[in-house]
Image (tube, rainbow over all chains, first blue to last red; front, top):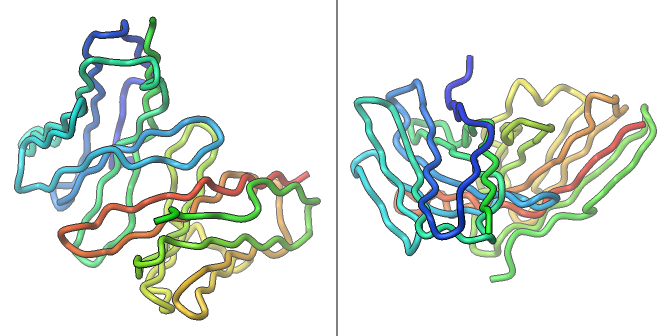
Amino acid sequence: DQQVKQNSPSLSVQEGRISILNCDYTNSMFDYFLWYKKYPAEGPTFLISISSIKDKNEDGRFTVFLNKSAKHLSLHIVPSQPGDSAVYFCAVLSNFGNEKLTFGTGTRLTIIP
Amino acid sequence: DTGVSQDPRHKITKRGQNVTFRCDPISEHNRLYWYRQTLGQGPEFLTYFQNEAQLEKSRLLSDRFSAERPKGSFSTLEIQRTEQGDSAMYLCASSRGTPSSPEQYFGPGTRLTVT
């Protein structure tokens, strides 16, 4: 039973345009949501997060949106740059005595120069 | 802040051998986590420590796996009698674990290949 789903295994975007990565979750008890970026042969790098009491969080070129009623999370990257090419994972955390991150299966983003 | 470090980065071993991996967390972080990642999947939780106490273990962590964090600083993950199914990337992460800062920061991982 996959609690966190990233339904697009891959996405290609032209350099300078907006990249939108999507994530759906099933458990309304999740209360903290994170995005990680992963290059080959490296560990995931934390990008941006949002708590369930907010619906938007921005950090530079990265914005995360949370739609709690739809149980949907998205990451917007604008403008997209070649260095953004990587695998992006969404992850969820519940603070109700459960400290583990539960990850989606990832979306491979390719930025086309 | 030097980040989370892991050693070794790569390990090739024969089936049936024991292996041990080390993780050094970010120094001011009191929580340390182990995850495993296989091809095409996101990282999967194995276990975590708050200081030296191991507080949760996943059912993925069979009795061949053991993790320690003896002084609440670095941690080791040992796999006994390795099997080919143990081949994966083993990731360590650390965090402050506070409500205002629950983000987990990952090390580069140890890639294990069991032949």
